[in-house]
Structure formats: C-alpha cells, structure tokens
Picture (cartoon, rainbow, N blue to C red):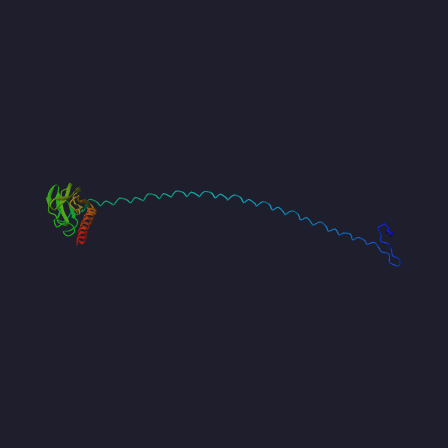
Length: 218
C-alpha cells in the first residue's frame, strides 16, 4: 500500500537534504491606477465681440452758402444832355443852342442810302457822321429812319435845348428791314444781329442740301 504524503501542505523532507523552504510568493506589485487627467479645461465660450459700433449718420453738410446776389452795378452814367458854352457857340446866333446828330456807320457797313433826319417833323439834310443844327431854346423832336424799298428803322427822341448848349444824339440803323432803329444820348448798338445770323444759316443750309441732292443724282 503506498504511503500518502503528509497533508500539511509541505513537501516531504528527504534525509540528508536541505530542508526546502516554502517558496515565498512575490507580492504582486500594485501599479497605481493611471493618473486621471483632469477633464480638458473647458475654454470659455468665444468672447462675443460687441456689435459693430454704429457710426453716426453721415454728417449733414449745411446747405450751400448762398452767395449774395451779384452786386448791381450802378446804371450807366447818363451823359449830360446839354453842354453849355458860356462864351456862345461859334456860328450860332446868341440865345440858340446846338443839336448834333451822329448817324453811325457808313455806306459800306450800313446802307448806301443815308438815313433821313427830321427836326420837329421837318426834313433836313443828313449824312453819315455828325449833323449839327442850331435850334432855339425849348423841347425839340429828333427823328430818323432808313429807306430801301420801304421805310424801316424808325426812331425818335425829344431833347431840351438851352441857350448856348449842345446836345449830342446818336442813331444806328438796324441790320434788316423788320425792326426799329436805335437812338439815344450815347453810341448805340445796331439791332437785328440774331435774325441776320439765322438768315445766313438758313441760306447756307439750303445751298448745302441742293449740292448734296445734285451729288446723289450724279
């Protein structure tokens, strides 16, 4: 019958042998639990930028400064109607005055027919340039008109004559027969320039159209 080893948990000791020490179990090295990393730091929510600064409405510029009305130039200095000669006028009877009518232009720039001159409704001789006549003191009417196939360019002016005085009157005939003349105490401008330009432009246009038609028919 086979002998059973002791049941104390130790191996049997063989005579002459070193007693066997029971094998000491190695304590299991306990590794520390994995260090828990703190939860990821929560970044603060993205900083909300303040709403875009509202720029003030565009500054309203003041209305354009109103410039003062153009300075009114004084009216043209009136030429004195009468030029007095204390010593009397050469060739003029004492107590009378003189009226000098200046008919502007000449036969080349105005008309070959000199405008007619009337003093107090009485025709007198006239020429381009100065026409001098002595008159008794008082108010007198100076009238002129041009003539070519018809009467045109009528103009008249009343003047006061004093003893020993001179009154200068200026007359300019118009550029065409469909308007009046210009008369005054200072040199005058001729009327009718705009109409003359229009007539010349129309004539030029007519000839241009006729020439164009001839070229197209050729």
